[in-house]
Amino acid sequence: MQTGLINISSFIIPGIAAMVFLVITIILFVVVYQRRTLKLQLELQLQKEEQQNQLIKAAIQSEETERGRIAAELHDEVGALLSTVKLYIQQIQPHHLKDPTKIGTLSNCKELLDQTVVTVRNISANMQPSTIMHFGLESAIANFCAKLNQPPALETALTVQGPLEKLTAENELAVYRIVQELTNNILKHANASRIQFNFIQKSGQSEIIIEHNGTGLSQQEFEEKLFGINGLGLKNIQNRLNILKGNISFRKTTNAADSITVSIPTNH
Image 1 (cartoon, rainbow, N blue to C red):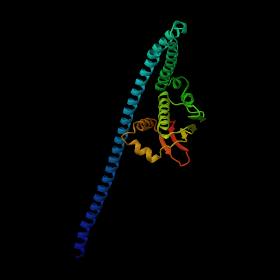
Image 2 (image 1 turned 120 degrees about the vertical axis):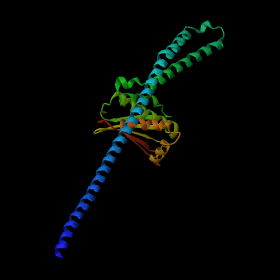
Image 3 (image 1 turned 90 degrees about the horizontal axis):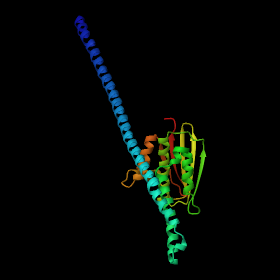
Image 4 (image 1 turned 60 degrees about the horizontal axis):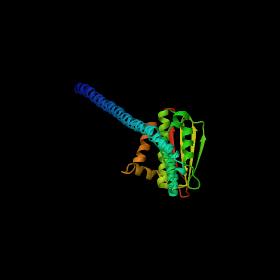
């Protein structure tokens, strides 16, 4: 009898061991398979994000190229034509006109031409800021600030805690466009009369803090508008930040001290 039990045990114990081994093998296979699947999904996601960033980058580059073409045409062709017209008008002297009312008309024409020439130059400069190419981001922002500064309607100031780390020309232009678009939004929607630009250089990171006394956005409002149908300007900002691997945060207060902080890594 005992011999029979021993014989049965000799089959059961190895069978149980084989089943345990099989279960462990299956579990290990499932775990390894899931890890490989997750790794593959992560790689595909990273590839997809990289492709999206490349498409956005190409679209932004195309936009900047078109801006440059239009800016060149405004400066070289339209600007030259206006300057020529102004030259001809300047050759007409008051004594050439017998009708006194025509003298006032001539003066008005000269004034309007002057304003038009300045406007064309400003449009050309905004579309293709040559200051960045020649003097860098800090000088371009300072120049942008100076143009905006029209007290008492609007007062602007710039502080730089640096020196700012040099970025590529492409990235500096992207940062300039972000600051430009944020400022335009403040002027259009926040009704601010004072804007303070702060550039802060930290270890491996640049921060741009724009403070104003208008009615700005909260972070939640920004995210809602970002995915809304009318948030094209904000989408452009976010697309540029994605390329720069940066982020943006909005702070809304009750004491007219709203701010926007843009953080951009400088070591990627």
